[in-house]
Image 1 (cartoon, rainbow, N blue to C red):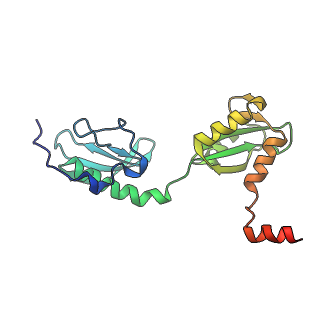
Image 2 (cartoon, one colour; image 1 turned 180 degrees about the horizontal axis):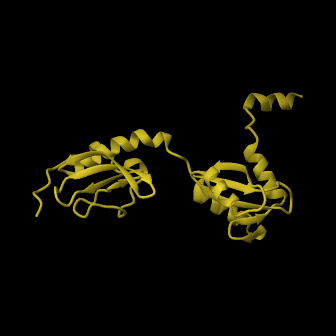
Image 3 (cartoon, one colour; image 1 turned 90 degrees about the vertical axis):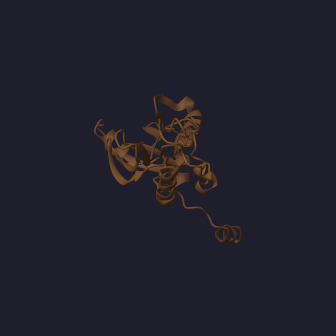
Length: 190
């Protein structure tokens, strides 16, 4: 059995971290601390029984950032430091509108991705028509579900919808720059 864990002040690690805490996903069995704050994760070496801090590069690859932590609390605290530094620059999940023509009757795919440009390339390989991104907006899965419910009558199949004035107007609204209060006042004076 492992030696007894030393007491720690969990207040020092901002519990829960940035509203990420899930309560059961990727937890250490003994302490119930999360061992993953994407893109970072902790892993215990079976032989040395020491914790290592890794950065996920995707595709199953990971970079070892630091190792030699005898205590999960120290490793977790270190992971939080990396996570907080990365968090402001993280990629944002966006809803995208991808299609070939922005006219009524054409089809548009409404989906979400952290990298819509990559999704466009993937879709392009399966389409004989030249596709383009009409618009993107922050919101991820929640916003995508909203659009899918809003235009359910226009759904063709899966995430593909038939363009109509309602969807075209939304794409144009997303792409138009916001009107600043000074500009709005000037428009009313004219």
